Amino acid sequence: MAFYSEEEQTEDYLFKIVLIGDSAVGKSNLLARFARDEFYPNSKSTIGVEFQTQKLDINGKEVKAQIWDTAGQERFRAVTSAYYRGAVGALVVYDISRRQTFDSIGRWLNELHTHSDMNVVTILVGNKSDLQDAREVSTAEGKDLAEAQGLFFIETSALDSSNVTSAFQTVVREIYNILSRKVIQSQELKKQDPTWMGNGKTVVLQADGIQEADGQAKKGGCCSS
Ligand SMILES: Nc1nc2c(ncn2[C@@H]2O[C@H](COP(=O)(O)OP(=O)(O)OP(=O)(O)O)[C@@H](O)[C@H]2O)c(=O)[nH]1
Ligand SMILES: [Mg+2]
Image (tube, rainbow, N blue to C red; front, side, top):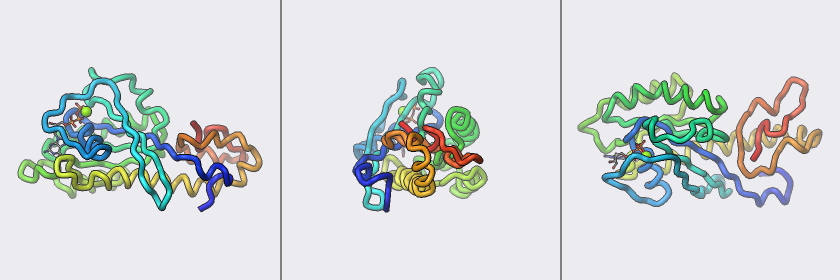
């Protein structure tokens, strides 16, 4: 697949992805399982912000996901706008054994959309699928909410590893696919205004930004650092 110019093909793609959801739904353990194949049975609340960078192979291309994790509890969180800035993907997590965490999803989506672009690729994640006996939110309810909100959906278990890699991969693959389409569409625009593309290192999806009515692409409109 053609990407940018010949020399730029060797550049990495780095996608910022944020984890959000109520405290103790398992955000940090999903990240620990995905990035290091580790699980902490008694993990403490995250304080501030942490991130891990993980390589993924998407269609034979190496893509890096920089996954950000913060506390679900307001008092432990860092500056909200900085957390979301530049994010192109989001995992919105609830705990299938605690309905209250599912009821909070709307609030998390509002916050996501307030602080980032509407086009952020988002997956709704029902974590702790190993706790079948304690289940309070059915799979169908999760699916329905995701469908109503236009989100991907998956149930995971950081404890037994099920679907953890798939959850992250789904988001990264979709970002990559959107980017591929936008790059192809934008090649003509780039010829008109080579400044709009940034350095291609960190990709910020603002898909509409490259299709302005006057045909002028803006620097940072699709893909900027
Ligand atoms: N049974 C089960 N327990 C899990 C799973 N994922 C996480 N936990 C447990 O749930 C608790 C909270 O997990 P964390 O990953 O710290 O939750 P968090 O969402 O990062 O919480 P905050 O940092 O406070 O926002 C810990 O005791 C974990 O061991 C899971 O898939 N299954
Ligand atoms: Mg945490």
